[in-house]
Each structure stands twice: as structure tokens, then as C-alpha cells.
Length: 183
Image (cartoon, rainbow, N blue to C red; front, side, top):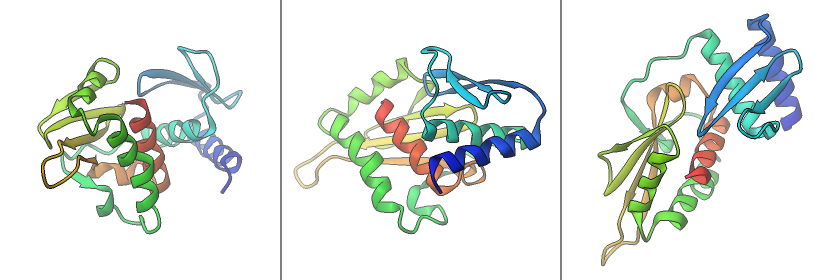
């Protein structure tokens, strides 16, 4: 499905759930207005429309939030543990893990700077870990391991089990990529 078709479908689903004109949603370090009447998702800090892939995520989050966000379980899942990932694993690795390793593989402590930029907390995973909350109620754990004499640096991105009730697999890949790029 093209971005345009996905955006249209998301707006239609949102409109079917609420007659309200819109609202605001925090996503990563920004806040976005969601205007149902004009069908626009705008960054409030930059006053520019959200890119289609970000708008789709924001709209899908708004839809689930209106229906009732699932409770965070505290149980972390690796991407490989999610259902329906067939064909997505290489893209997930390339679009998230590889980006994180390029940025922080030789200096994992650098990721702690994200604590000042995003809603996040330090985590006790890996050699260095943080939990980022790109959306309220959607935690994403990033763990890094330092290289040693035998192995190179490694990273992983884990999701709370509730993610599967919020986003589809493609949305999870895009969400993880936006988190990785934003770090």
C-alpha cells in the first residue's frame, strides 16, 4: 500500500472513531497537532507537516489511543519474537541496529545523551541501555554491548509485549528506525 493510501485509510478510520477536530500527540522530542478537519499532522515546534511515514505512525497511535491503549506489560520482546515479521528482519537490522552501531558501537556511553533529548530513562540491559518512550505508553529499550577481544560491538532494540496490540509489523520497523535515527 502506498503512503498516500495508508494515510487516507488512517484518516478515515480516525474520523469514524471521533467527530472531534483533533488534538496533540507527543512523538519523540516533538509535539504534533492532529487536525481531523484539514487532515494534517503538523509539528508544533517546526510548524511543518509531518512526513507521511511519521504521520501514519501518529495516526495509528491516535486510533489505538482512542480505542484504549493496552497496558505496558514490562515484558521485553526482541523483534524476532513478534509475529508476522517474515521478510522484515533484514530491513529491521539495516534500518535500526546498524544505525545504532554506526553511531555508538565504539562509544556506547554516548547513547546516554539521548536522556536529555527524549522522554527516556537509563536501563539495566547490556553494557549501556536506555528506554525511550517515543509515544506515551510505548517504551522501546535500546541495549548496547562494548566490543571485546572476541566480538565486535552489538546492539539490540526490544519492545514491550504490548507493542503488537498498538502497531503492525511495518509500523514497528518504521518506529524503531525513527528512534534509531533520532538518537
